Length: 242
Image: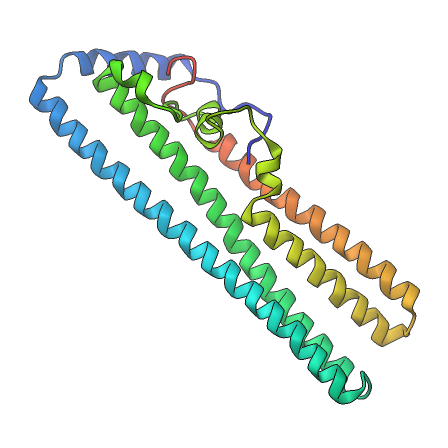
């Protein structure tokens, strides 16, 4: 996801270092340029492989969570029919819901960490494309995605054909997990209150309140994670320069 606050401003020392790198690139021989291009391409493929592996692992984790949630809810339905929703059904329901909530939050943490990793991969690949431009500035018109390793460059990579669109965040895998965790947390809290007070009103009220808190906290956690990367990352090439 993208944020509104800008990243660190390029310092004069960094601008001087960038100018020095430009002068160094101009003085390279063809053989040296070829070696650098091979090294950059190797690193680029390594980042692509790491990004693909991370995304594949996260999608598998999400699929496992959704499968367990479906199985858990079906189990509760079968137990309810067998016990008439009386006796030990309440304890079993609380146990199943607690397990699902725990698995949901563990999955959410992994998805959040993967989103941060993906942001790092995009920044790194933007930096490499900037290095390609240092070797051959004429390549710039062929790059559809960003060539600057700042957050304007990240936005260009994530959204190459439009301005930043928050619907992409709302439709992301992270949002699916957040919604599932929100529903599970609300159900568990409501069921717990119902087992203590037997009041439908209190159960619904507490369940809704917990769901709202979990949803808001999850969104805030994702935003803080993004902002942390934005604060600590120091770009080598700004969008104006790239």
